[in-house]
Image (cartoon, rainbow, N blue to C red; front, side):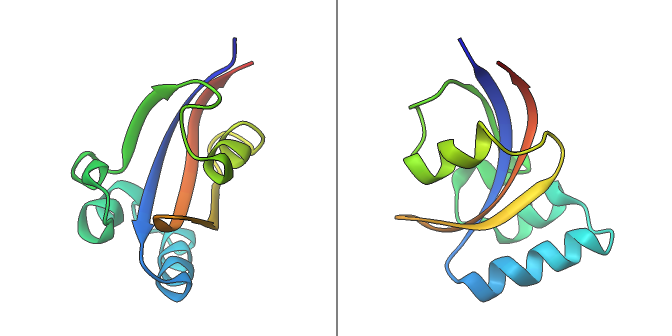
Length: 93
């Protein structure tokens, strides 16, 4: 069964999400930005969500995590919680 590990940054607006993605592309550390900006409790751990399988996260999240390339920041991804930047850190299919 497929498993993935990912980290994310959850913010309230798409604009904030885009700005953070630009900062990462310009060399900012994902985990530092997660600690500073994420609205999710996982932000304290640099956005780390640990390992999970398909169906354990909301649909929009799952779709990205189980299809995006490992190690590339994806987003903004909108869910009922807000806007996410996602990075798949590991995946087994």
